[in-house]
Image (cartoon, rainbow, N blue to C red; front, top):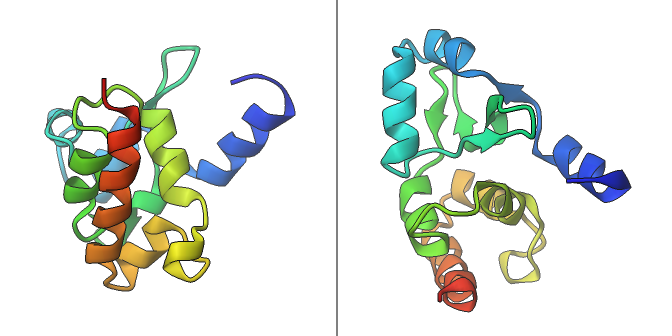
Length: 128
């Protein structure tokens, strides 16, 4: 990402955890965090410097549990896990279909069905 647009997107997605901090906060080993990414349970953003960052918005509660049904949404939105930055941006952008809430906010509020439906639509647009 470059320029003001990239900086704005980066700010909207943060704050971030690195793998070791996230592992400590959720009492997981770094390998377990990597397994969660591989299994499509959480998003990992890789920077141009090769750093692995985990946006805090995808977690909730004192135990930093992944958002309810985030894995279902990610499977519909990006089943091949090829655009984690795009997935993160999609999850944070307010949607009129969700009453002006972002998909991440809607998941927090129990709107799984609506969010999965929108993710299916968006995923269809990006399918090969």
